[in-house]
Length: 387
Ligand code: CTP
Ligand code: MG
Image (cartoon, rainbow, N blue to C red; front, side, top):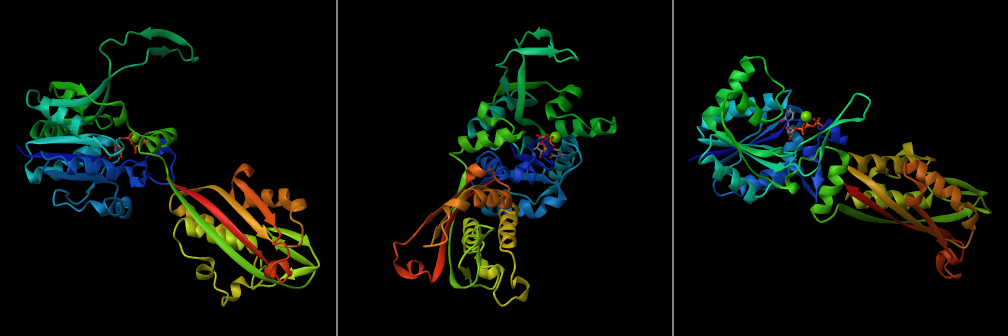
């Protein structure tokens, strides 16, 4: 018996509202798709694994499976505009490999286990089709158009369909081709295609953990199940010299002072430390690398542009800022009277709530360059949560 697995990853994940299709979001630092692919590659009875993807996701796909090199993994197959169409493309591509059985699985179910795969394969020995499913636990209601309960449905005999869904290869390929020829293209699982074609399909027990990640809240739950979110921490440090002048910029706020900070840009030492902390959290180098002093574009520049660029890079990697904490080391000016304005400005620059922004200050008891009022130093920490 030659068994193939077809994993569906060509959807857009519109209900998940993420910055990328949900199958490429990481859970526990590993892309959702990679969790699913790994489970099938690791199963000893599965000879081939193929993934249907959207062509525009090719780079995301390559990155997601980069760590999974296996001779069982075929090249990606182009998906279609509906799930059913993606399965059709996948089955046609797999037919060249002449499998006897196929397990069709949603990439958006990263926590499929060996046990579940075994149960579906076990049932396929007796039945032309078998799917993982869960008996309904909640009471079911029918709503009227006004959102009130019209009636309660008896849940006896009701199951929620999951994947994998397994079939004899020839049966399900024929069923899909017939459904397509009949103009049907919106069936949301393969059991529906099989039922329509008159194939008997058995139900075997899936699991609650094998739920499909669909809504934003599902990802938070999945992170917890995987042992917590992928949290990164970065730190930054900067110093600028104090020279003659009448104001300093600190945390994006202009403060009248008896000296000024010297620098190529506006010399906002706090925003420079913050930028480095954000870049550090995602391993993206430092401020000098992205904004060299030698570049005339940054002469006199407002340092908020450095923070904005670091934020863009964090987001481009699927990150969100968890919180930031800045400590200024100076004898003067006094920071306390400006702390609220600084937190407000930082929250605005980072598009964060103020509760996630902290600004602190300390003198150095007259010691060192800060104590002698020769310069101001700042240290910053940024937490980035990767999705
Ligand atoms: N899928 C697919 N091709 C499509 C649509 C969906 O391969 N044209 C895949 C998805 O990638 C997912 C699985 O089918 O792994 C189940 O679909 P669903 O949960 O609906 O995912 P999406 O369509 O991506 O999400 P949404 O409906 O919220 O946009
Ligand atoms: Mg969908």
